[in-house]
Image: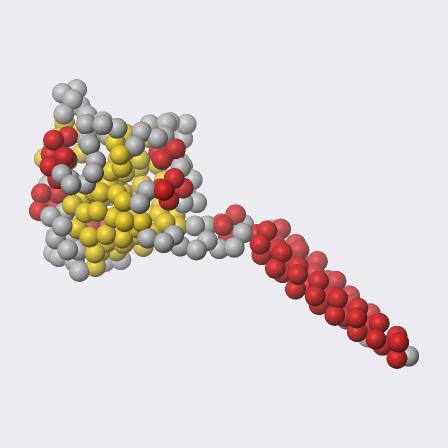
Length: 243
């Protein structure tokens, strides 16, 4: 009977080891949560899933990054008719958002921002951006990274649903999302509502706790197995002494 119990403990320890070594990398997932307000008072929250890897057309391009589904749990509280989940995301509950990262560039005139329309079709200039965010701490005549967020695969518009900016020229912020954990504040706007209070600032909240890494889980589970085996062996020794 004791031999059967011993075999069960050994078998359990083996299964634990196999299960741990087969745990997916997703177990190490971590998110960054940003929260902020628009100038009209809407409260906006969203998570950035840093484990989403860069996809084409961004691969191998230091000037472009594309991360499908990287934005999660985007939500607008205290909504208005123009700024709400339905108005911005196309649904009452926002779907996953695709994030495109690039350097802020202009057309040949040096002032009109490339590939960005606001308020239903108007072009936007660097001076306009500076006026929108006059106290945002960003010099739009310097090096700026642009983050375009689109929901529903851009099906509702050829323009991004949300745009935010960071003062930087670091390509690591373009091709990898983990660097955003060092960015404490971002500013941006809803292009469709830019001139009517659709600007906002976001602050980085406490990062979501990552799921324990496989090595940590392995150590914990194997410790439990080792304790069980030790207890069984001690019990066998006591039985031998009694006999």
